Length: 360
Image (cartoon, rainbow, N blue to C red; front, side, top):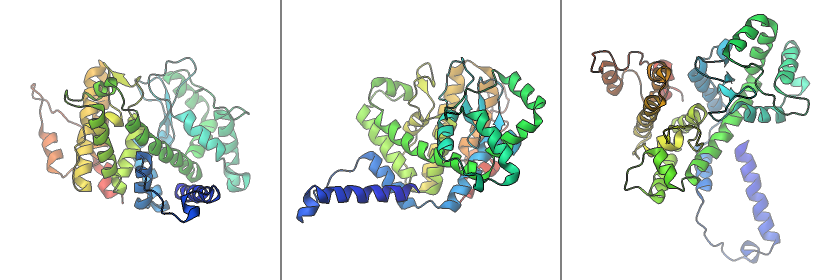
């Protein structure tokens, strides 16, 4: 769909140039222009040729990372968080009045959902009640997205227990194939915009501080590195999926709220720490190591035991799966690594079916 729209827009632009008496209309050869980074990204993605079968695999991959493809866990409220997580990407939804420390994604996804809402004839009769209830639950009549209806985690679980029919409606709706495909369409577009934005918005020393860049780095050198690594990752379906997954998982890194002690852990910061490698597998392994590097740094800077002792293990399993299998020597060595007190450093390390190399 995105590719066909882009082809259409290019045709419109060429026709407009013809009518305006530009160089193409006069028969003169067009003057070559330097591609923008956004154009380079778009060209790389078009040449990759992701098809519907690929997108269905990505849906399974992201859902597996977020909630092990268990429909009942597609709507949840994790311990230690002040927001609900909904959908295949566990999109963040804040209650009214809560300080938004992280980028809220559910309302943005819901706007796409509203615009793409299936017609009644597309909804199976047995699911129409679920779709109607979910629409009123998420949206006002104007189409504006409501605030998250649960004020806190305990309220969420109490509501779930007291309203089993309504809970079933929401689960049936959010996991329906049509709705999951719309969610992925949002994620796809968001990731495409994010990788261009994180490149464009490296423009100050604050950005270098957030990356913990070395003293010899400049804005120009960092931008060139980010460009090279992104374009390298976009040469494979696995690299593209990893970028899409991480943007949804921890953001693009441009939101200054998502930093501890001015240090970030979003994709912008991860890509700075990713070495430029030849070969898609080596590039994925470098991305995986860089992601764990930044997430470990986040956990240490957070001052929160839950991040250092609990969350970091799930994060490691997820991002190491971008480039590794459990059988790889790098992972085997990590499993044997011990802290000074003799305890295993990574007691819960298990990539399993999170390995991106097994997806396509």
